[in-house]
Length: 262
Image 1 (cartoon, rainbow, N blue to C red):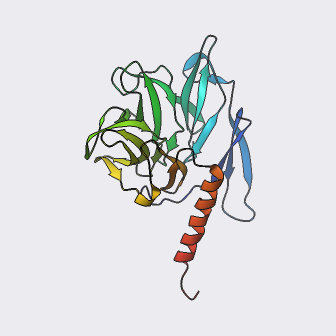
Image 2 (tube, rainbow, N blue to C red; image 1 turned 90 degrees about the vertical axis):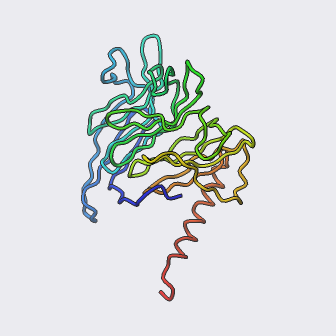
């Protein structure tokens, strides 16, 4: 599933060791003799910038963009509480994007937990959050440098589908241009499931091949995303089968793209 225009990948790779130490491996020029160096950026147990009295918990769901910024899930550990959180970097500086108990952009609702974040080359972040203190149970959140926006909220009407409402969302995938793609289950008559794309022009449904045979209880979740392309699979799909089908599709595409007579 193409999310937007392709963009070249940065020559970099993240490493998480034991979910305690975050290390960033930065490569030099793409040549056989290129040098590499490893630098320690963040360690679980270090103090949380801007949150005195808290230290960072384990790290998970790390993502990196072409500018070598990273975003990931962690927690803020205090003497009496541990709050789930989304963390991001800006160079070697880290900040808390959202945390459990913080007021969300959904009116009268606070964050409770978070899906894996998605980060694009401009530093925009998207994630799905479960909410507390109001009727909406969850929302897909898009965060720029200046503001947080709820682009889809459970219980809200589905654009282009009268009588349908959003029930549940997958983790989102963000494109290089800031568009956001996610799976959702819908309530109504009939109940259904599908893919949705948010752009600055609004939210719209993405056609899903009918042979996929989605049931109302199915939720399409991202299995892989890179270079503005994403693979979504029904939740609970066996990982081995997903991997096999994915590489089979890649091979088929490569053979189809291979010049005839070459």
